[in-house]
Length: 157
Image 1 (cartoon, rainbow, N blue to C red):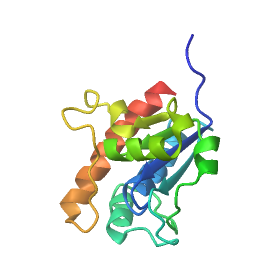
Image 2: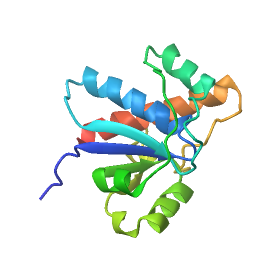
Image 3: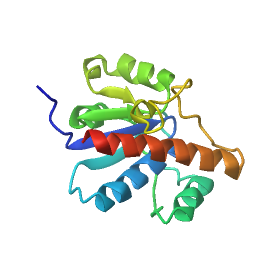
């Protein structure tokens, strides 16, 4: 028996300024292009940054690829968000462990985003590294890893 397609996917990273924000926005565009009307996508961070604006370089990386950056504000992960989500997709193993520590009942829905990668299942490094404060190259590399992972994710839905 196969699992039903998710209705809500929650992307999680550290601060919700770069990776989870980029994943949410890219997922929305790729899902529309694939003709999917669902699932919904949202994002959050493990840290509470008080509604900080998206990292300008992350927004620029999205715009470079013709994707909407919007007026994103960071959100801290809550128990309600985890409860509502069918899948909670994190960027790093340490984040997976922290989500499971905070929300032990969520074990069946928390996965590494890169585990879906269309590039051979994620390769040697299971993490999508944080580009925050680094060069535009790091943001583009991060975006590429997210994009390939989302392509694989969409094949699973």
